Image 1 (spheres, rainbow, N blue to C red):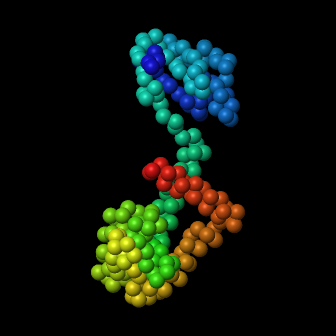
Image 2: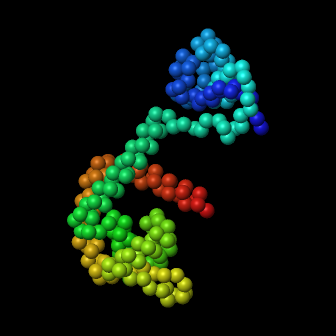
Amino acid sequence: MLMTVAAAAVIARTDSRLNELMGESLSSKGVVNARVRRRSLPPGRGVYQRNDSIVIRRSNLVPVTPSEQEPRWLDEGEMRAWRTYVNGSSMLMDRLHRELQDTHGVSLADYEILVRLSEQPNHRMRMTQLAEDVASSKSRVSHQVARMEKAGLVLRRECTEDGRGVLAELTQKGMAQLVEAAPTHLRGVRAHIVDLLTPEEGEVLAKVFDRVMTHLRESNG
């Protein structure tokens, strides 16, 4: 269904930009003030309200489909939350990786594989489950385990239970590597995030990312 608006139309969500255009205050819930002062608009433009959006238009009309409307831009608080997460998580992973690599010659990704295997009965698990546990693709984990096998940290075996699938198994060398590197990693995790949070903040963090992971897994089908 087409909506008629101006060639120079501006479809704006009710955010801080409307304050600049309209000279009117908006409510905290983003509801447009119904008493718009037309004299406050730029010359030659009209205004009307549609749901929670304001449309400013000129007299030259063109059809615009809903897909051409502006996306839901992040407000200031949402943008701050998103950017601090992206930058903070990237910096944290980089620091933890460098501490392991510089001190023990093992990457953070390889360390996570060693940890997951050490937690399993007989220190082995299916490759498909291993990929899911470390939030990686099957092909990526397959290449990673093959490289770790060459280093003597893990072995790959056929699953004898059903004759299908492949198991990854932690070797004695891999366990020794894990035992040596674990204190360094633990100190880093505590110093760079855990000890910076209150117990309540840690619980909130766990709930938030449990929700994110559940959503992403469900959206993948």
